[in-house]
Amino acid sequence: MLLITCGAYAQEQVFNVQRYCVDEIPFKNGQCDLVGNEYSFVFLDIKKSEVVFFFTQMKMKYKIVKSANFSPDPNYTLFTLENGREQIEMKLNKLHTKIEFIYPNNRIYLTVGKSTKGLN
Image 1 (cartoon, rainbow, N blue to C red):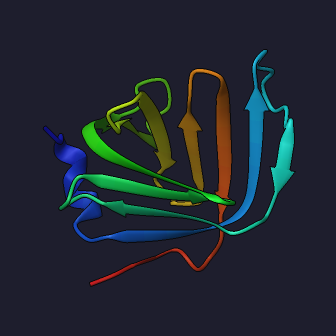
Image 2 (cartoon, rainbow, N blue to C red):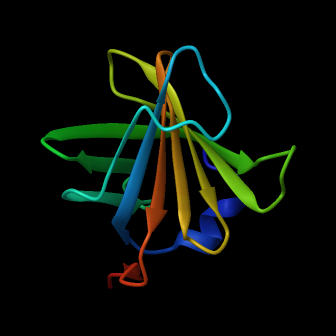
């Protein structure tokens, strides 16, 4: 079930990642254990309830199981994602310039470039 945030994402969104930062356990706010700008994209399709994340040489595909405004910071939407093996969270800011994937062992912070666009 998708909440009221669906209207904001009525079409597929393509996010071209300009920079990534991976913070691994133990988490330290603002720490980057790995950083780069290699081939990375995020495809968000609310109609199909899916997120596809191309991260360097990996492809991860998730089903969106829930979305809501992120209560600690209303400038973000929080998505709960699952793929049969795991359930993770993804935060997307309202300006579509920052995405965060929250995994049990790491957090991936993405800075999205100006090429972010919606597809018809």
